[in-house]
Amino acid sequence: MEKEKYHSTLEAYPFRLTDEQVTEQVNKLLAEKSEQNRTKEVYSNIYGCIDLTTLNSTDTREGVWQFTEKVNNFDGTRPDIPNVAAICVYPNFARTVKEALTADVQIAAVSAGFPSSQTFTEVKVAETALAVADGADEIDVVINLGLFLGDEYQEMCEELSEIKEACRQATLKVILETGALKTVANIYKASILSLYSGADFLKTSTGKGYPGASPEAAWVMCRAISDYHQKTGRKIGIKVSGGVATPEDALT
Image (cartoon, rainbow, N blue to C red; front, side, top):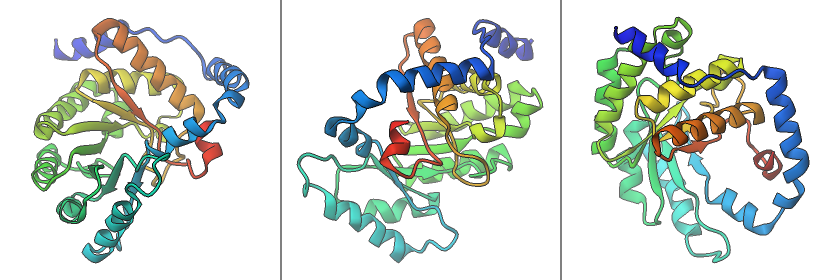
């Protein structure tokens, strides 16, 4: 019965576009909008959406502290450009950022067995709760790709719901790892299931091991968010990550 619930949810969100049709939609959108988006205001808004990230196995407390100081030092130096949206670190460094941070930006921590998401649900929940207790305002987790690709939607969704509960007041950003999902149909399904499991944001990629964000993936995720909003009235954010290294990348 529970399994049927998730399949029924997906049936309520039919998505019949092919990969080729989505590419056509994206190319049309880029042709119509790219030039008019090349404005100072748009570039400024893009900068203010950045999660400044350090996710290296060699990260140290001193290095993360100095990384945070860069954000502190930028704050207020350019009235025409906002500071970054957040500093993103491994969960064990959330407290370090909290102690060092003076700028008005969010603290984001990856959690739940990032980036593979292949560990026990209990570990994911505990790691998330500890990161929030240490000062994380936002939690970034990856869906369990193995469960999704194996059509084990119930276990995948229940796990995300448990993680959401552990977030308390923190924002939950769910990473789909779109480069591993490969088809637009899979990206749409993963988006809808994540939204119904409590995601506050959808995020494209980890930037580790798989192709990063693509315009097609972002388009499909936006479509899912729009469809979900029409049915529920709930507003969801989107975060594009992985493969976005230049202003031109961000525009396209």
